[in-house]
Image 1 (spheres, rainbow, N blue to C red):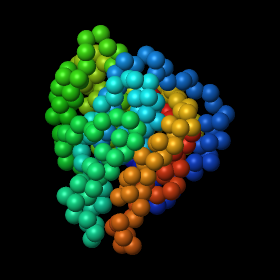
Image 2 (cartoon, rainbow, N blue to C red):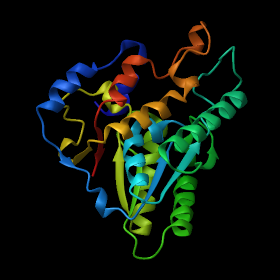
Image 3 (cartoon, rainbow, N blue to C red):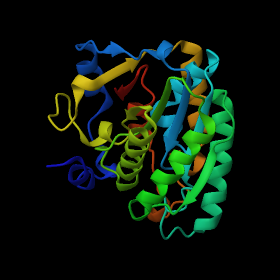
Length: 257
């Protein structure tokens, strides 16, 4: 069964794999460290406002603190996170999420994201356009000879927008010759330790400084539309409730190298 099917069959309300189960397993396995000194410039591609922070916020903050230029590219404005919400229209939700993302990335020490404005929930139908626009961003931003990392959501993450963004980023790296680094977000929800659907052999980890972790936590707190219910209506439920955040705010971050 692929990650997409397993994600669809594991609703957020079902809580997924508990963080304590991950902690026990991760503690028993030694993954190689992310070789951050090999990166001269970092481009972080986020399907939705918040993926750049919950997925690799500590890595972004660490790179920025070391003087590595970081550019965040927001694929969508996140207008579809609460379909049918009685509290916020899609336009109002997008406006709120953009503001949240701007504040969060500032806390990580990087500038406001470059926003592509593709429709939330429909990235797959715009994948070729996204690839072309990412190539344009990389061509305009990166200098010859730089060791550029393009961080994008893992192509097996389970969320359609995450997987489409990962595929477009992979193709843009194939065209430009830059290194693709994939970060999981929803994998930690639907997968299990030793899961054969996950390329564990490719995993590299960062163990950030305590100050960096604190900055990531403050940045995540900015996403109030996602971590708190918009109202008591079921359609306004939190997208990232505490049991999801526990997996995304652990003391390490992992990527697929």
